[in-house]
Image (tube, rainbow, N blue to C red; front, side, top):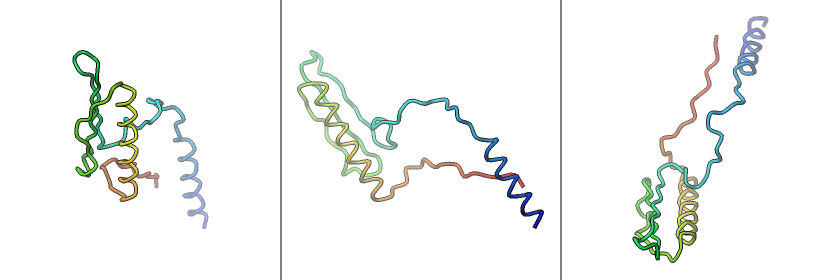
Length: 108
């Protein structure tokens, strides 16, 4: 009983002492950061039109061909909406993109 209690207290102390409330990268996570979804937005040479293309690595059916837009804002809006749709599909199908959270280990 005492051994089990000591082990439990060690785990609790290790968890509390080991916490780090500081992050190296505290920029917000946005639609441009979703794993395995790539966006390519660029202007025409004279800047009169903009192109947008979304490539989805885990499902080619969700990828889009190169589309033409009148402004950068329109291209950004199309890309954001399509990326959000592709990410919702990924989450609904529980597709693992290879990014895992490391498992916690506790000292004995």
